[in-house]
Image (cartoon, rainbow, N blue to C red; front, side, top):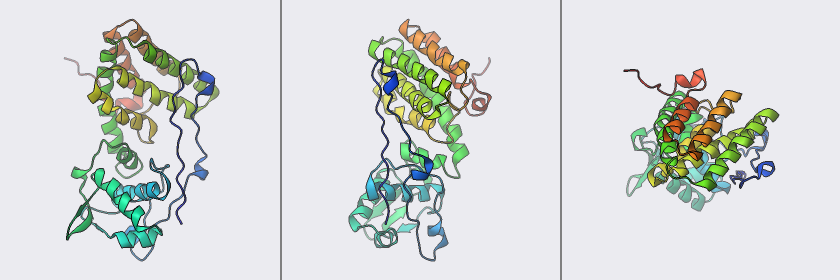
Length: 288
């Protein structure tokens, strides 16, 4: 039987709560395993070797994760029929679990269900490529490099604009929390705690987008968080920690506090290209 997926704490420390920052990760060996497709069909028998806990819970969440990874990796190609009864038998789950899982995948654009046709895998052009789960699944699959490049290009577009807008809003509460995240990152780097550093970095960039005061930009915050958290996203301050990258984060906070929109945007662009590896992912400004 499939085992329950582990949920991850995504709480954010309040101002000054540096010693109680709540991010924890279970060792890789303790991550929930999922049953592979059985039978003689080799295509259905292939399972992604890389994976993390599903954002869903229990059997339903794991089945969404398993089928989603197989579709995104190409193990289940476009127009492939998905028979609910077969899925239920091979994963040893109820009809209800299968039905709800397929509904989630349909909402993500991965499958379609039509009368007299059944449920079939949809082509890539129909997928919701901004969905955080699909971003993660692509990052662990054969489209890894494409996902890396595309996330980097989106970040280059989204984040400099977000910090420029944020500089005009003067949200002291968010500015304090941003400062807290920079301090957490500094402590984590000094202690060699890459997990805490990465989580604080993700919160930092998510808060920046929230501070922009633009609901459409805020809707895209999941893209930035996914880019920072999944393997295959652009290099972050915590992958190769140094004083330069942490310093760029601090300068963004300083620029926001003084209402310096130009300075905040410049610091963000410097942060996005602080490592040579990122320059292959994020387009540098063109010289005229």
